Image 1: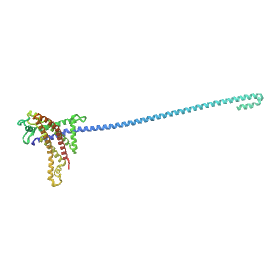
Image 2: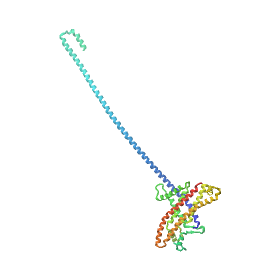
Image 3: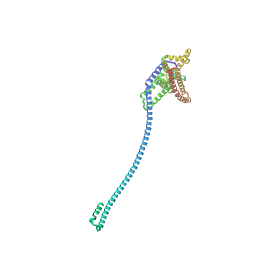
Length: 156
Length: 264
């Protein structure tokens, strides 16, 4: 095992190989690896973000659903209220109408009664007058009592 | 299997397997096989990783890209756990060392006779296919790391800081400077030496055991069948060893460089 010139040749080769490796082999490989690592990390981060977004969207959807339900309930309730109100109003109106009709009828009846009463009175007066005339025709002098009769007539 | 001039004895067989294909004389000997396989594997590694890197998609990756990215991320995590400074060299350096050393170690998994025998048929007398069983290879890797240790020590702490670190530790007193210098120098030198020898020793021993097991095939069928079992067992165990050695080399490199960046 003698040391000889092989040593020199191999040392030169060693440095050339190391230089070549440093210059042309290591950088592209390392770049590729690092680039891929970055992409994988980004991908994982994106996946995480997407999962979070999904969760958020689901929460939002649930929230909106709840809101929609609440609104629907509110609408139904207000509709019910409105219905009750309308029925109430209609009832009140009907009552009022009825009262009005009754009152009108009463008034009409009253008016008719008054009219009949008046007529009756007139007729009674006429009758009385006729009766009195008949009685007086026989007993009293027309001339002497005409003033009384006239007075009476005027009174009626 | 034996090349010209070597008898087909166990010793000759082993010797043949442990001899590099070399040209040159003395120090200027070049181990053609070690250089060829190590550089070839290094180029293969860089080519595969570069082509994957060029086509790398940030979307859904292919299987090869996944595999490459697994290795890159593994190395990157190891570096990040140990090294806390900002240095764009450490991670690619660790990746290069880990994959390259692993691939060179992996040549040990190829049955010991396949490639040398094929080469012999093609007229190549010797072929040692596992570059990390050549001390020159492991030592040069370790020296490369050592040079980087020195470079970053001086760059981060300055020359004076580096000298102070060598002379005023662990005993912070002027009279102890020679002792400190001795201790710290030994510590410093031990780093590349241990790096190189650990890898070399493990792989050399592993290779040697493969060769010894392969010797059993030359004996009678009983020993040969035992050899099959042994080889399988050693192979499976060796998968652990080569991975572990590559990992240890990488980790220690990171640790040493991280120590070089620390300011005391």
